[in-house]
Every structure is written in structure tokens, then in C-alpha cells.
Length: 320
Image (cartoon, one colour):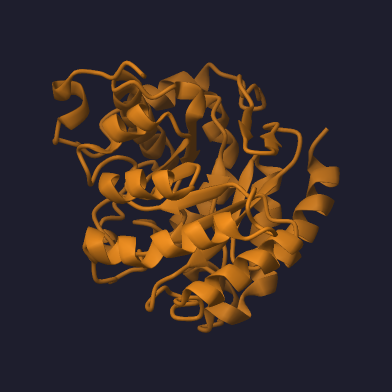
């Protein structure tokens, strides 16, 4: 069993906003931005993740009635399994299953509702011969949902709150010994659009990650099991989202795999003057290409087949 930190370290409830930004900024000044060494690769089931060698594609599978671009499309178990098969056949590397919408203004759901949505889908994907070995991540902020999902066959915990919402999350991840994706977010889906006041958005997100990674490690999470996600569009304005993509290479200082989620997001809609998220495919492709050029390791996307092609070409262009 893993050794986990004290309850005081793992259950501490105060999460101040990015107080370490200035210190992180000074560190960046003396570090080479082009240095890239992720110290440990990852193997999940039959798939090896060799960070830096290519871009890995995480396919979005929302089993919710209210997600921002595909709510309701995959809300039944059969529809979700069919979609998973399609993604596997298109070359997906990870399937990310979510049972609670985190779009701006989304209404929270309780753990029981979330479990009712995701567990049958995870079990169905695991039992199907065409999808049985695909790595699965559970997109949740609740430790109880994370634990049940891992026990049902998921492999990775993807937490958009970065450990802020559930004081038991870090201890749970440590006990389970699973990879953990830590995203930056201020506030909640209900309040995040009012929480975009940054002096230096990248430096302050780096400060958040340093603080939360330190807490996670003290709780017993293996640092090499952590990936980071700057949370494009989550408590970020249109311009801040663009600036984050332009400066993604600054996150290389943390020497952790970098996940980027730009798929169909509102900043693309604003650039294209396109209110329909489902008509933002080519804008998503351009943003994904930019993210790869700046060091993204994983892209979280809705349009798997198309972004697999984009990443294959971009990898040849931008990776050595």
C-alpha cells in the first residue's frame, strides 16, 4: 500500500489563489524555455506513453444531458459504447468519460447521479472486445466517483478542479496509485467567468501548479504520475486563452506531461464568429497545431479522427 501524507496535509481546505506567481516568474527567468525532459514515461494496459515522442489524443465522451457541444448524444450506454468503438477505430489513445458538465453556468450534480451515468459506460467499454484495452480516464472532481470509476475499470483520474473541490481527492489518488491529471480552475462553473483577473496568467497558473503538486506529493501521489492542464477557457477570457496557447512552452519548467483542451471552445468561436460549437472543427485543428508546436503532450478533443491526422502532421513538423 502507498504511504500517504497526514490528514492535515491531505485534507487542508484553504486553497489561496495563485500566491506564488512572482516566485515562479523569477524561476522562469533563469531557466531555458526550450529545455524538455519529462523524467518518466507511463504504461497503461497495453499502451506506452513516451512523452515528447508524439502527441497523444484523448477523446471526449460526455455521458451528460447538458455538455456544451454534445450534451445528450451519448447519454445511453449503447450510444456511449458505440462512440468509444468509433474513437478506438480512429486512433484514440485515451477515452475521457465525464458524467457532470463543467461548461460555464452548468448545474452541479451529486455523486449518485454522476455514478449512475459513468459506471455502466466504463464497465461496458471494458467488457467490449473492441475497446477492452483502451486506457480510460474518469473526468470528475469527486473522490468517491474517482474511486468507484477506477474500481469499475478506469485507469486515470482527470480532475478539473486540480484537487480544490474535494479535500479527499489527493489521498484517494495516492491510495489508488493511478495517474492524475491536474487542471487549473478558479471558482466553479457557475462563478468562473467572473474570476479572470490575472496580472500574469501563465505565471499565476504555474504558481497554482507548484502549490498543488507539492500538496499532492505530500499526500503520497507519485510526482511522475501527475500531468497538468492549464484549463483553457476555465476562468480565462478569450485573450487569456490565446495567450496561454502562445506561452504553453513556459509550462515545460515543471517537467510534467502537458494536456491541452481547446476543442470547440468559445475562444475559437469568437475568432471565427461561429456560435455553433459543432462547426468549429477547422479552428480546433489550428489551435491543436499551435498547442503541439508549443509542447503539448496530450490533446483532449471531440473530433478524434481529424485531430489524429492533425497531430501526425504537426509532430513531423515540430518534434525532432
